[in-house]
Length: 93
Image 1 (cartoon, rainbow, N blue to C red):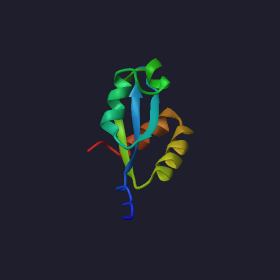
Image 2 (cartoon, rainbow, N blue to C red):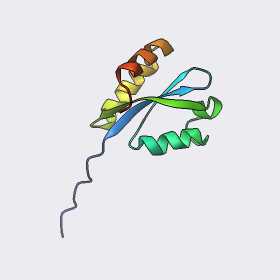
Image 3 (spheres, helix red, strand yellow):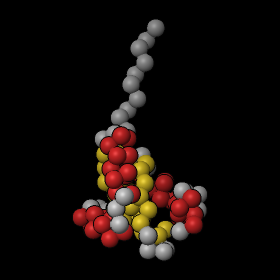
């Protein structure tokens, strides 16, 4: 029986979204475009269904889910000002 191939390595992304109430939503995903589109359509997180997104502020790449989730948890503890300063240092390219 042939050996199973390991699945291709997936990159994970942490992203920050500015919402209509000036709050900053932080999330992780493997596909930022698809996930942001879901937020815009009101099919993303409950947070962005209540507070519709204005724009994507930052996207940071991680080699694994654990690192992305750990950073997401840390950033979610920050104030909106700290999140904006972080996003300013990580502009979308």
